[in-house]
Length: 484
Image (cartoon, rainbow, N blue to C red; front, side, top):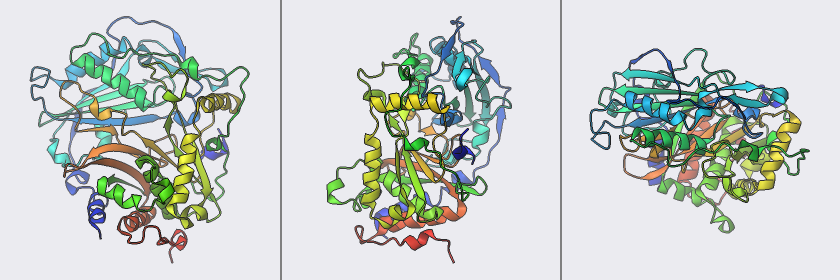
């Protein structure tokens, strides 16, 4: 492994009330979860016994970790299951039926020469936990968003199940709530799928649960489409994999980490758009939020002014190929293009500076870029992306987690279970679709920072939202330096 891997406007008031105090009814909620013994769910019919290689994008070091997802559902209202159905029984049966089509998920990862990963399609099955909790959905509060109370009880880490190699590739826990609702929580070995691929699998389980005999989208393996060329040749610049020594201990410490979620609705996004110079007015909400969060986060962590800081933007590359990757492909098909600058330049310049860097990074991803990336993985030993002074953002607003329907309707909340997950925790944030208690559609962003940094982060963000001089220089770089 490389050295870099060891590691008061109305918008203001509304934003502050949501982000700075996760509702006490949720954050302080304590309840008991009674779990049955974990079991393996095998495919419902015999499946091929074979070895299937992951792609050279799949098996990079930065994806060798487990990623948690959680969906909350209301009680059965005779939606399509006929009433009084047990979600545990319905979903268990549907998983077994779905695994007939997605049988690699029932196998186990092995590692070969050159750290190459492959799935041994053993048919052993995915791990499943049945549980009951003495809590209602309403007790979680009227704004379901990370961090969720007692998450470790709702997605139990079954001892010995979390290894990347030789372990179940999926862990699923279905927890019945005393109101009749339930929670579907899942943990995925990220080398197998990205968000789009996982939602495709979850959607298939939902379809089978509602009576289908075949998923509407059939899975396609075809991982060889994202393998290196022969001979491999790096033709693009990939600063996201630079080897950056952590000379000053700036990889975020895991002790004393604070998790908070930040809501960006129409009024918050409008307030932030005031900082965009005229020539960048057509920038997307993703580009805007990424620039704002990167800048505020950098200020909060107080790096040395001349040190390099990075933001990695996950970009789905499915449509970048000609022809596009086949419909049904469920492997990892994204890149981590990076924007790089010094802390001083990022924080002293107006927001437009960061915005242009982010837009340029996103535009770097092409079919050639992906081929070059696969080649780099093979040539450099499948390195981890740079995490020193790095922030990673992943937009799952269109992934469709909340659309997954097991027969109880769409999820009340569906998406990542927390921010900061990864092979190196604390680096990543997700952009999650969210409707607040006022019925406003927006984006919720879980952020994970040390306590001292979170205070500064909140102050900086609020400063932007309530600024009466958005294109002026309200931010003083001195804030980055240690407080007196």
